[in-house]
Each structure stands twice: as structure tokens, then as C-alpha cells.
Length: 216
Image (cartoon, rainbow, N blue to C red; front, top):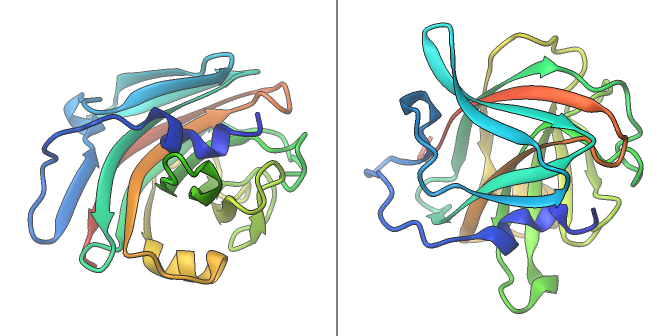
């Protein structure tokens, strides 16, 4: 779907007060069994998202079969104060190697992305996608095949990172925007996640842990 990368720009909702202090802004508290503030957007078939107990911890489980739907949350984040996006994730069922720079291969077992919402000016929307690639491409960046001006991709994990392993990530969103878009935004407007397989027609599964922004 050519607009699925702009998910957060279309499903944002007023979230009210988010738990925050001087150094941390919590967005996804899946370990507490909470999906408060997260809203679904279906593009092509529905990925199944649900909180599950996995070992001693709860996490968000995602299973996609020829489907593309995601979850997003609206929250303005001041990157001058809390530029670091923190999360954990795990691939439970990987996709086969795909040509991810093409429209036919634009699927990911796990992705997390941040959005600057263009509002009525949709062409001003900017999405930065952190993806778990199905090919050996960790560190690679590219323009999305459907929305090359509006959506940039960065592989932070790839097929060499085996399934079944929880991985903790820390990404400096301000620096990543500078590297991929050539500018540093003061704020972003929301975060979304998606496990999708609609273009390749396959199936994949992943788990997502807590998501928060921090000062460092």
C-alpha cells in the first residue's frame, strides 16, 4: 500500500497525558499489559496484535499473513530534550529474503517508525522507518519505493540476527533525521509500529517490548 508508511499521520489520536519526567517519555508500556493510546489502521488485511505473556514478561505480539495493518500513537516529542528512541523487539517468524527497495518487497517482519505529521499538507509528512530487514543489510538506508520523498528506511537489524532473540535498541532520532533527510526537526508527532506482509504475500510474526524516549 503506497500510504502505509504514513500510518501515524492518518491514525493519530489525542492521547492526553503520557507518563513523563525530565528524562523519559513512555509511549508503549506493553510489559504492563497496556495498549492505552494506541490505535489501529488497516491497509490490506489485518495484522493481529495482542498483549501476550511470554516467559516472565508481557509484550505485544504481532502476526501477519498477507496483511498490512499497524498501531500508532500521537505524542509530540521535543527532540532537543529527549532525542533517543528506546525499544525492544524480537522476530518470531522471519520473512524470506526480499528486495526491500522495490514495491513488491516492501514488507517487514518488524518495523518501528517516527512521523512528522504534515496535517492537511500530506506532502509535508515525513516518516523515518527503523526496520528489521530480511536481507543482510544492517546499517543500510534507502528511500521507500512507494513514497521516496516522504519515507526513509534504516535497517537496524537484519537476517543475520536470528529469530527468537530479544534485542534492545537505542536510536538518536534527531541525528537519524539529519542523516536521512538532511535536517534536524525540533519535534516529531508520533510513533507507529507494523508487521506487514501484504506486498510479498507471505507471513511473519514479531514481538515488541516497551517503547520510550529518553535524554540519553
